Image (spheres, rainbow, N blue to C red):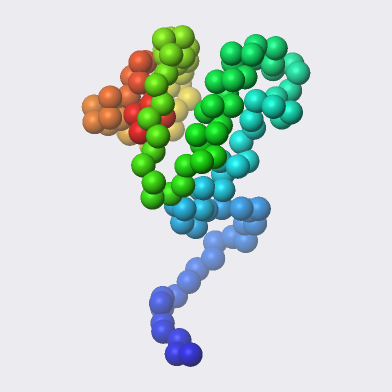
Length: 129
């Protein structure tokens, strides 16, 4: 086996150990299997624990995430008016915190998401995919 030089120099700044980190986008396929489903993993103090419609919707979304694989088309989820209204309330609340708490990188990219992707109080990033 012949070795080829890939880099002239490598500088390791620190020896940070992480339990898992994706090295290729396809590695993210394993993340979907780590999300909580609407079954035994949903804590009894969760606001949706006793709501059958919430649990059914959560199961549907979890199954979509678990079945998706890198390279396949991303499934389009049609959100209900209630889900869109909830996202709008979250969007408005987060928007009020941005100037105080958001990092410079987010502040730079957020207007581009609005301009080029339609990101808004009625379109979250997941629904844009």
